[in-house]
Amino acid sequence: MADSQQDPNRPSDSHSEKSEETRREKKPRSFWRELPILILVALVLSFLLQTFVARVYLIPSESMEPTLHGCAGCTGDRIVVEKIGYRFGDPKPGDVIVFRGPDSWNSEFTSTRSSNAIIRGAQEVGSLIGVVAPDENDLVKRVIATGGQTVECCDAQGRVLVDGKPLDEPYVQMDFPFTPDVMTCDTELKSGRCFAPVTVPEGNVWVMGDNRSNSADSRFHVSDELMGTVPVDNVIGKAFLIALPPSRFGTLDSPDIQGQ
Image (cartoon, rainbow, N blue to C red; front, side, top):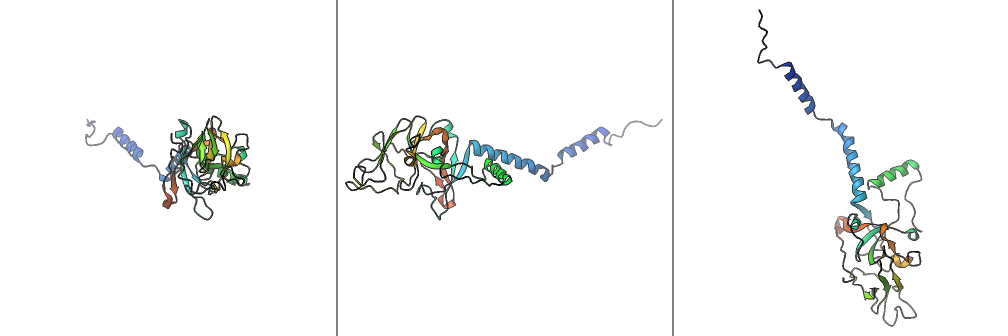
């Protein structure tokens, strides 16, 4: 009778099947098959970061000179604006903020979107992931006073007052002339710095550009329904870093301008 015992050196059929299955499992996936997944994950992460954590904004004007560059003919600063901090607290005096302009601030705003539906759709998608600017009037200014405080200008030295106390504003290097006994808030020829007292409504902030002689800020809109103030709900976030150009890289200070 023939010996029916299996050769111990011969791999069993089940062992061969498992080895083949293991080889199939270990076979690397094609890069081109994984690429669309990687791109999708990157886009989703970019959307989440831009929406909830931080976003980069371009400074388009010189209203914040010399703190932020946006002058005609120069390279505008690109600033990083973080969005997390104000979820746990409101803007403070001295903060540099980016906000959506209230209705009365938008008279000169024009949409940058294309009239072509396909291109406009691509621009909207690009905006979601942060490669195209939002189609809204986003502005950057410094918080001067918050809800319940009264702001006005000026004292005898031409300084802005909040609740009757002068502000310490070392960042202001460009302002309207103010000359005692010649051009003040009491002389016949008034200084351009002067504005009447405004009490900021609760939930709003009073903002001004560091370039006081060239900034359409709260002073410019004082006759609107919000008395020139900006609702905290319109605030996108706090500017804390100049990212580009490399020669301008650095953090942005939030000085205690009210001495509190």
